[in-house]
Length: 86
Image 1: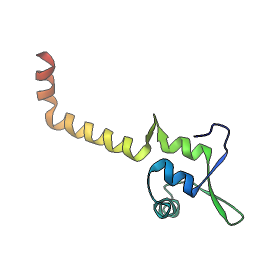
Image 2: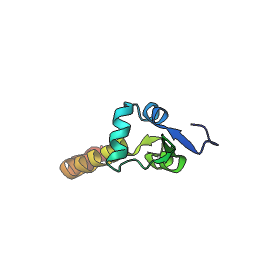
Image 3: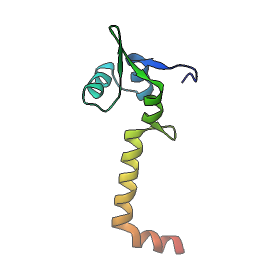
């Protein structure tokens, strides 16, 4: 990502998230991605891009990983403790 860029196009965001442009438009319409309109162009502010990527991962993937870890700890916490003692 370019550091000095203030706005990104839908195409650029699609490439960053590795999804289609249609998927980006759907997320914008659903309110999952904040976007602005400049004339006929729809652009995504740099701050929103930073918000979408937390620690280098897309926000949705990070949340999925956190949920999977939480579920594993809930289900196998005692087993993890025993394995940690070995």
